[in-house]
Length: 411
Image (tube, rainbow, N blue to C red; front, side, top):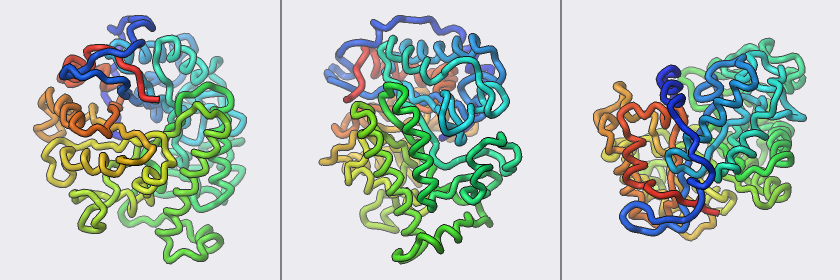
């Protein structure tokens, strides 16, 4: 979901944030253009993988970690956001005392070492005290961002079950084709759902790994054992991910009926040139590349919300934001799934990005365009470090144009 930011810049901006209190995040109020929004998603992702946003580095004292975390929640309030999507299982590990998986190394620098406090429990409590929703973000299948199982703590489930593991592209993954893996991933997630009043369980776009040129994801043993009755391996893989999504949705609701289940998929399902139901795009297709049939998940009503990552500018020839928003609005129309849009704040002001992203108004134009489609119920911004850094004032422009008053998140 984007890329690493300049840590020093983001932290310097964060240090200037002041607490504005819970009252600033409450109530319903007029928003952009004089329209009254009964509710509107205004979220930001808070990424922990590789210490992208938080903690600023591994090994900080517990009080410093806690202070930084509260600073990010205060940042959300300051910008009149109402939801923080907090990455709590970045690599088959945990940012809470899990009964299934080790403590994450992003906290102490050592996988399995307790940090001396409960980040997820604290985040839920402190977010709610500020009038924010806390959506817990889990990555289902990624085990490690390296390919050496011996670097995992000895008690890691991947070391106890090496047959669950597939090395690919310099990383380690659980095999989505194994029913026991699917059950274990759900058990690990439900551990957090049972312990905390989460407002949502959230997945991003990583299911089967994105293709790596010249490499093969070797799930032949699982396919031979479980792939009978499918026309090809791709159909079987999609069914595996469909089962993960449908089963997780059902188990979350059974465990805690008030907790939502949402997914933020890659922004293109299929191109119209491949499938007439697809979008007018010429981009990677998540249906084929990562075996994520996101359109079906929405149409079947398995999700409470979907946040497609529309990380392209208006007018981009291969994947035009202005063409993708109406496509997703049509997919969501008539379903029970609320549609939010994932926004690429991290691109704004990055000199490596096209000229459109050097314009502070580009992101604000996205929200103006999306408002033309009633199915769009809000936006989530990637990511917290970029909200803090706000290199060219794009987030400040969004707040001034669209977030002048607080708003409640949709429920």
